[in-house]
Amino acid sequence: MAEITVLRVVDEGATAAKTIKLNPCWDVEKEFKRAKWFHYSTKTVEGIKQLSAFLTQAASDKHSLLIRGVLALHKDPHQPVRRLGVKGHGENGFFLSHPQGQPWLLLDFDGIPCPNSIDFLKHPKLGIEYLVSLLPSYFHGVSYHYHLSSGAGLDGGKTIRAHILYWLDKPVHDDVLRAWAKGINCHGPLIDTQLFGAVQPHYTADPIFDGVPDPFFEKRSGFVKAKSDTVTLPKLVPPGYASVGIASGLNPSEAFSTYLNAVGGQCNFFSVKIFRRVHWGGGLSLSG
Image 1 (cartoon, one colour):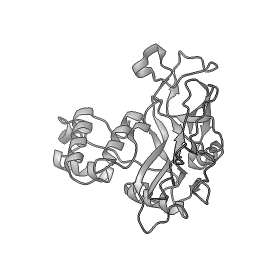
Image 2: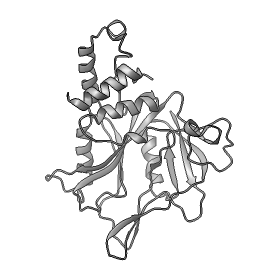
Image 3: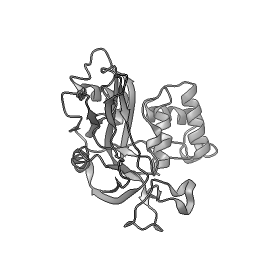
Image 4: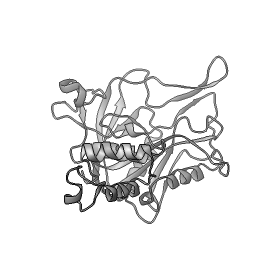
């Protein structure tokens, strides 16, 4: 079960959805007025099916967005809030990462080249399936909710832009997810690592089309049922350089191989660099 933070725009004229329109030069552009203040609320969700049902409704709400963080105890939930973290803003901050972590995550794919064999505009689900195939194997065969990004299809389907949400088998802290995401990207950018923070906005609304047709024939979001409803993320070892062989029974070479298998990566300069920074320096594991 998760208590998801929902922020609803207070500022007049601001929205939580981007507007797609033609500029004076007749070029398609995205227009967006960010909000500064929000009304705070929470939504209790249990499992990917309930999360998908909630997000399906949220797609039509142009004034709300989600964040991963929880409201700080010194802030009044009945007063307008700003999307500022306690970390970095102290008493002026409003939110902090959930101390036990969250059991859900949103993966943001932005500008992934679409294979020639897929007509993304006519068959967006095939594009989503392609994105899933790029993820490590522990995401395969797991139910998910997808939502096409506001910029999806504006380039004629040359790239795939979408959000895919999963439910985890246990809560995972934001710091750990950021380290894991950097590992996922070690052999090339795939997902946005910035989403795993307390106040990073998760936009859930469909874009507003002003004088421009929606490039997709089908709905922009949906639920895909699979064999399992939860993702089991692997532990990333070791907990620290000095204790690699003692605590985990692995020498550095074996630990690095285990790390590559966990993130679905390949051995190159970037994977070695991420492994050294995350594991030998930070001592993080997916167990939180």
